[in-house]
Length: 126
Image 1 (spheres, one colour):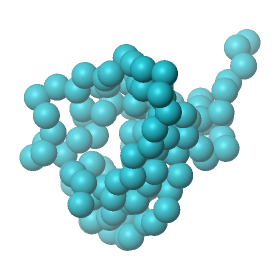
Image 2 (cartoon, rainbow, N blue to C red; image 1 turned 90 degrees about the horizontal axis):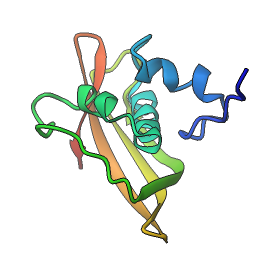
Image 3 (cartoon, rainbow, N blue to C red; image 1 turned 30 degrees about the horizontal axis):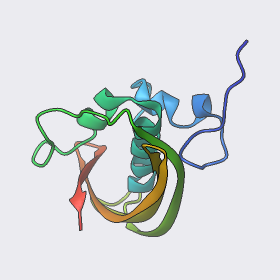
Image 4 (cartoon, rainbow, N blue to C red; image 1 turned 60 degrees about the vertical axis):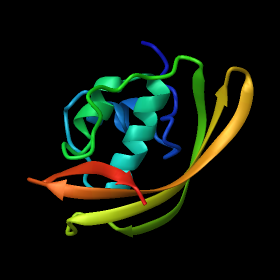
């Protein structure tokens, strides 16, 4: 049996018990923060299809192409506004660390999320 590495989202849980079931469609994110973490993990694991299906239909691009030169190295959540199981909207502010073409960097973003038909979707940056 292969060792299950920690989830890239930084939860401290194994990938198989954290974001992988979301990526595989076995369940949907319960909160905006969980969706944001699973989207970060999808970038880190190269799961472009998941990113496409969790992007709000109104704002998503025609396709999602991942940069093969980008290695995602860490995620820190700095603020969460609403986005619980009882909300329809939420915001998550985060810093994502990466290495691109051998150079380390980071990006800080506040993302907006919306729940439609019981599923959370990434809308855009604030």
